[in-house]
Length: 267
Image (tube, rainbow, N blue to C red; front, top):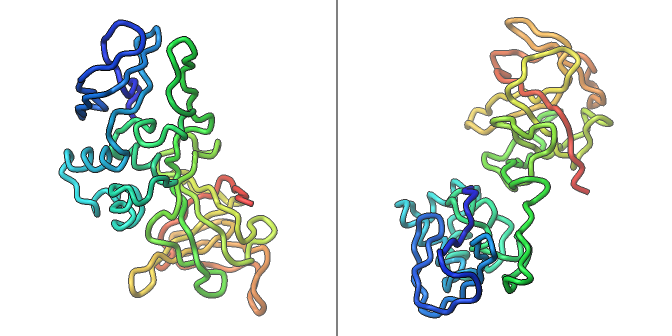
């Protein structure tokens, strides 16, 4: 997201009421009764006379995107975008992600997420950024798909601030844990923090990926002991009845292994 102030209008300091054109990340909005409160460093923290949904719609259309295009980039449904743009949904946990995708200042969409409404220049305090960083860490859901196996959701179901283990890791993501084969290390409801870029090392937990016959993402979480060109030698801590702790996974079926570097407990 751009680091420039959301609204920068070169005017004498103080409270102004005028017919102006306000530019928000290269998108201009006209408001005949816009009140602009400016701080001594010439930064202004008001919101122009457009509803958040209108700002989102105009920014989307300027890029030539459909509501479905925007929804896919954000990770939600097209009807959800439609409700936000229409003003039916006035608050949404996806606003930070929408602002990021459209390169909008979050304060233009919901001032409550960045420290509250504007204050007079004499009382103005510069907004403090989220200490946990932007919500750009994709979280996937999962369902049990058999003995020790998982069916992962095709799209993220939530976006979180990045955990410390993957602060600057490209492609990092999280996934809810289901099943009990890796208890007590990973319990149902935990979120595995995954770095897909690390090499394969014995003694570390990994999520192994394959595909079902209909193309659905298939996964299993196990500890990697060692591997060859043909198989992964893995361990599970709490095997289902009739299954072993140590066994192998065919690399022709389970082609990808991403290392788990941490876990989160949402509860």
